[in-house]
Length: 191
Image 1: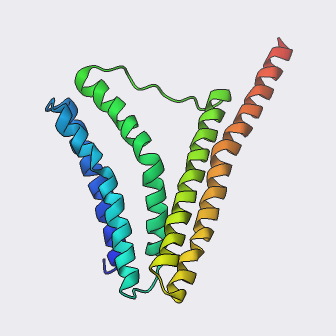
Image 2: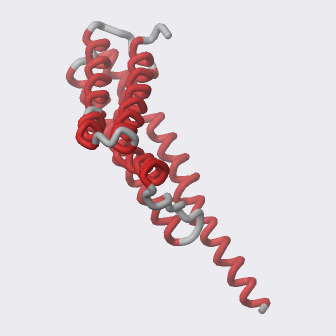
Image 3: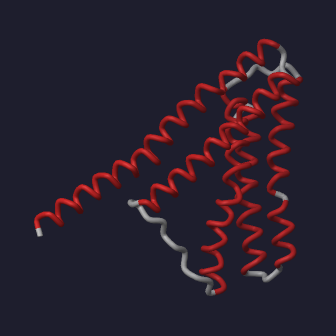
């Protein structure tokens, strides 16, 4: 991999999982709650490392590639979704290693499923906003005019992701809910 930003993103992603799994192993297997808390508290350091790597690459005159824009999207994602990802895994670790309650499966249809999808979509919108702030912030503070113009095209992949998330999330569940309610109404009318 000859792109330093892609390499940094990959290292941060691996680091994320090492810290999460390591932190939860410390908590539930080694019974070292304090060490677990400290380990999990290191997760934001990875975000700082990635922002610093992108800023340094831009400052050195690096050509803006998709990886630079992906870094902003990745950072937005981790800032918003890291906590819920850790909580999701934590429930499974607790169930597996200390007899905690079984994970509750989210509903796939109905009003609760729709609310879940709307909540997750709203979280994505926050992540996209953070990605824009980070990327545009780098464009205005560190990048030269050519780099800045290239960085600002992050809006295109964010728009595509937002569109597909909405269609395959809230809109899909809403369609399932409406289809399901029509089917249920049809079944009741036949009875």
